[in-house]
Length: 601
Image 1 (spheres, rainbow, N blue to C red):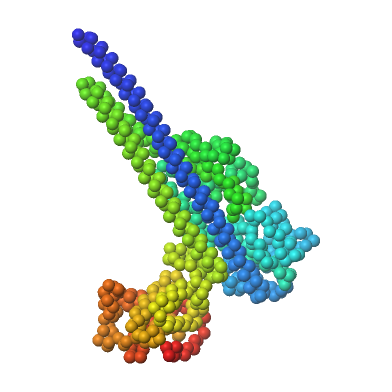
Image 2 (image 1 turned 90 degrees about the horizontal axis):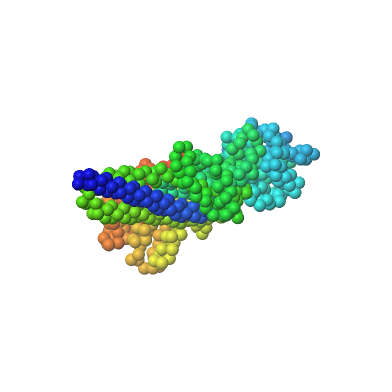
């Protein structure tokens, strides 16, 4: 009996063990494939949105490069007006002075050697540019454009290669021949006035800021954060990956215009990349492959992209490579497998509870599948929401920059890029105030005044000599807005024909002065101190929080300024005085100002 029982137990244990191993194996591979398919779906969504983001970014960069080209052309025209028309009469010191006035990175003058079909840098703000020849630039393509500019004073447009304007051509930003560590954007100008080719250029800093704050790199980094299984995302130039392009200068293999990695990272490399990339482009669909790289099992996804219009001079065949961590994907499964095996052995030893254990086991596995699927669904939803918000914000920024470019506010355009998070309105073309933020404020207040039947006048004097940072401009707009709102409230009970509010702003003795005047009732003497306290207001509680004048006083004090109040039966005037630093004044000429209070009538 004991022998038979032992045989039966051994048979039972072996059969149960085999059954458990079989179930565990099925579970492992089923879950592995489920997770793998889930990650492929994640990557499908990710690459789809990266492509959309890339298309938008490319269009944004094309617009941005057009704006930079226009800026370089204006710099060329200005430089021509400040320099002698004969090359031999120009000095490098003059070029340095012109460069500083125009706010560009550098300025070079090229001599046209027509008999040699070549150009040579003769005068420059950078000594490395002197003696530089152009015959081999871009396999002679640049030299052809230069010759047309000197001979015909206009260049024939080349598709996806630079920007053409009257008497001017701007090359794509690329590695500098004279300094391979520098990437710049160059412009070239000749209208026949000078015997040389004017070449102003600007650094990559402004373009890098554009990429960092509103480009594909930002989007890739955000998606990597939201998908913990993704090790890296790289967007490659497939022509270089396949060896179709080679850098023309062996001493500088990573020429910017011929770099392989366009966006993201490409540190996980495999000998199979070329073959799998070719397969993806032949089929024009994604190719997935599990492989080992650097001792780690990864899932590689190759997604082909083609763009009709692009800013990168022929980068029309791009490849997105997404590398996912298979080890991390399966490690949780392995740990679960170990725990399940222990539980299975316990079930075998218990014997009598075998059936109950199997039921619990199946139920537990089902719950695990649901939990994992739910986790990845949440991941997908989070990724989709992030990308959608990014695309929405990015399009708004493109419209804003386009507006700045159209009214030729180039300094404000650069400031907009540096402080992208501080600005949320486009420039206004109707109000002619040198600081665009005040354009929007005054336009809005004019509309309110029209609606409330208030005669609202404004006068901004000598604002062109101000050079304020965007934070200070924003605070000054808040001050002016609060004061104007209070003035509107003060006159709203007067007859329509008598409602008058005036906004005056001017610079006097290194001080910015803003005054808001109204002809409403006088402010009683006993509350003139209280009105600047937090929470105090003479308006109904439902319509005001009592913070407007308190904010005005707080902002003025933060800039070492002061708030003055004069109030009579005829006129109430709030005056804000803000000291200005030398850097905030473009011109130090004395300002003569007559009393503008006569505008109140």
